[in-house]
Amino acid sequence: MPEPLTFYFDFTSPYSWIAAERITMIAARHAREVRWRAILVGPLMRESGNEPLLHQPLKGAYFRRDIARCFRLHGLEGRLPAVFPVLTTAAARTFHWVRAQGREPAQAFALAVFRAYFREGRDIADPAEIAALAATLGHDPDEVLAVTRDPTWKSRLIDEVERARKDGVCGVPYVLVDGEPFWGADRLDMLEAWLSRGGW
Amino acid sequence: MPEPLTFYFDFTSPYSWIAAERITMIAARHAREVRWRAILVGPLMRESGNEPLLHQPLKGAYFRRDIARCFRLHGLEGRLPAVFPVLTTAAARTFHWVRAQGREPAQAFALAVFRAYFREGRDIADPAEIAALAATLGHDPDEVLAVTRDPTWKSRLIDEVERARKDGVCGVPYVLVDGEPFWGADRLDMLEAWLSRGGW
Image (cartoon, rainbow over all chains, first blue to last red; front, side, top):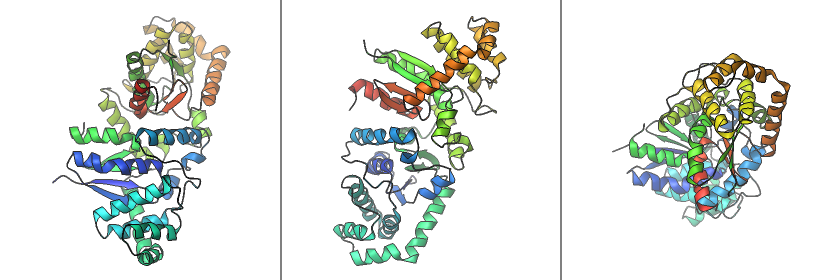
């Protein structure tokens, strides 16, 4: 049985959303599963000396255009929310709590958060919004609210960011295929070629 | 007659080399020509607040690996030279002088510089090396040496960097297709899709 792919993402990243919508299908075509790993990419980007993309002169204008073009290319009806980037601590902690309940509930929750943010512009920084979203998937909203403040899940997210640092994550989406790293939604086609050919 | 593509590159950029080896063929498949524009990307990257890639923690290790993988994918026998990045002022000034003599000599010169640097590890910062390279293509090496110091070509290169800034260049390779910008060698397939479909 081949190893699952490891998929690092941050809920505020539009390219992570594109990858989230594509990665399961790509993996399935090669009889692979996907380990989803929500992180906060901010600390890792700051360590690389990078500001958020849209805050950078020159790059900001390019990425604003590119994000819209990439959404259209992949048939995703979304846009950059008014508040961008957004703090994803509550969403990521909740993700790891849902993840402890199984792979499929976690993927469904992750896609629901991405879509709420990029399709509907909902404020995913707000724990109440995360609890309401989780409730639509059958989770107990009061339990979710408690999770967003629980030291156990706070510390679990810190561990996940540390694991990402050890895996060399310098931005998201970042996918490991048998130890080979692919950074960026625009590398998913190359990643699939890597899966097909077993590397080169 | 459709507009030529505009291809911005810097001779020290490995991803620019990949694009340089592919862009003419991609354009030709869509009955387009290519305007090659050598620039110094350093000032534009600093304006975006970015250090050279390999100097950035986390990103450096990723890109070292990625560059080798991309060279192999595209069948380019090259490696990162010991001195990297390198100052490309002499090479870029000479490029614009050769460019004034025609499109094809300029492309041949550009490919010769990229290959000398990435295949043979030659010191393309050295005007004497640039003159020797140009001589193999039939240019007068003494004239080239003079060009590398000539205020006319110094000022021409400054103008080219300014034009790049106005075109929104935030990194290289950067290609404009009818005003639509594509940044990165990993966007050439998307660029070709754009040419095929006339945008989306």
